[in-house]
Image 1: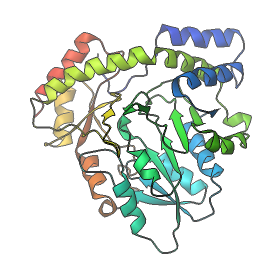
Image 2 (image 1 turned 180 degrees about the vertical axis):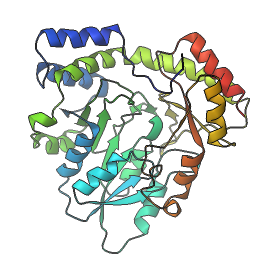
Image 3 (image 1 turned 30 degrees about the vertical axis):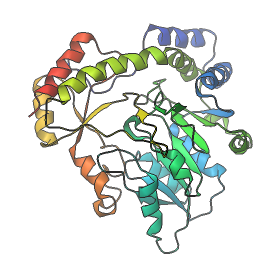
Length: 349
């Protein structure tokens, strides 16, 4: 059986939670969603939270809460998900594309400052929407010093730490997706929360439609995901250590971890195992296919990967989009499967 790159972390406990919700006729938004917010608060220490149907809706509501005017700019990474562009179009806002640091998947105060310095005619940047691509959290504390409100998206970086602080705890508002390829895989949905009471005020003024709110079936799964997150993070760490030993014996490179302004290194959550290849992606995919192991282009579903912007605007992001491959890494991998992937990595062309 082929080892796929991604697999949702769904086990018997999640299925039992969903069946219980169905038996109790708790399908739409209701008590389970409220219980999820209570559980999430214990893990994330936020002041206020909304449970919503998707990360796209969460981004839409986060940007709407800032009362931005038509045509104003939002700074986003060139490696943000494609739906970021669609949400901005719906709100009649303009993207201000920001490059990433060399050898890293994250924006920084330096790259955001460079994007702001371009000063396109008539474009007024009003906020930063910082997606934590592949689980790598940027130095948001430094970015906030530029004077713009920051929306963090820690859908892929849940469990990562910057010093002693959780990823997603530096910005004004934070999105935590619950989609199939997020860290917490609840079949869909997102939490939109504010850590500080001052920032939480804008969320309290929002009244999302019932159709925007998280159904109880997804909420029931997410409750279990939070409870099991410590165990799953440890399993990811163990697998990543095996892969790293193999990668060190190749000429291919791993991403550099960020540091904040006080030089606190990031503790990675091992959301994925990307390698910046010294050979072509096509050759690596073909080699992996022979071994019955999935390998994907890391940034295919990003704005840069989809061709939404010119490569010249963000050359570092463009280079990474051509050369970065993802290998299978998730808690449900067996020991024998992890060893098989590690052997593949060690023998890459």
